[in-house]
Image (tube, rainbow, N blue to C red; front, side, top):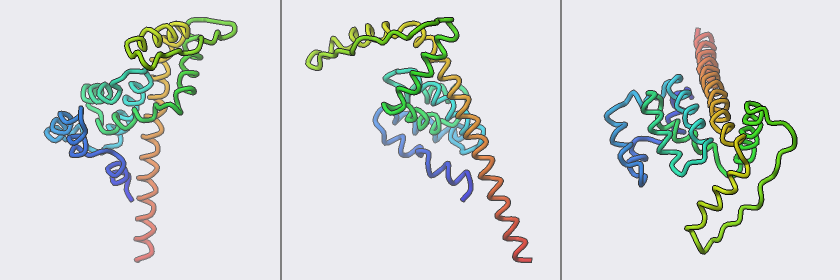
Length: 186
C-alpha cells in the first residue's frame, strides 16, 4: 500500500468535515481548494507539525485554530486537525512536563519546582471554573507559559521529521517491492 493511500485512509475527507458540526464551512472551503487537501509528503508533514504545535497550547478551539493555521501556511488541513488529537489527557502530563522544563531553562529558573495547590472546581457553579483554572495556572507560573509555545515548536518539528521520513521510508519500501516483482517476472 502506498503512502498516499495510507494518508487518505487515515485523514478525514472533506465530506466528513462538512458533516461535523462547527467544521461544515471547512469541508466546502477545501473542496474548492484541493491544494490544501492533497496527500503530499511535505504538506501532510507540515500540517501534522502545525496541528501538534497548536494542539499543545490549551485552547478550547484547537482543531479550528489548527485548520486556520494550516490554511494560512498552505499545509494539509486534515493532517493539522488530526494532529491536535495527539494532545489529550493521557499526553498532558509529559507535554506539560516538557513545557515546564523548557520554560525553566529559558528563564533560568533553578531549584525545586513548587507544586500548585489542588484544582478545586465547584461543579455546580460553571462561572467559577475560569477563575479557579486561572489561579491554578498562575501557580504553575511563567515557566509553563513560556514553555508551552517552545514545547509546541519542539514537538511540531519532531513530528514533521517523523512524518516526512516515515513517508519517505514507505515510498522507498514500495519502490523496492516493485523492483523485486519486476526482477521475478523477467
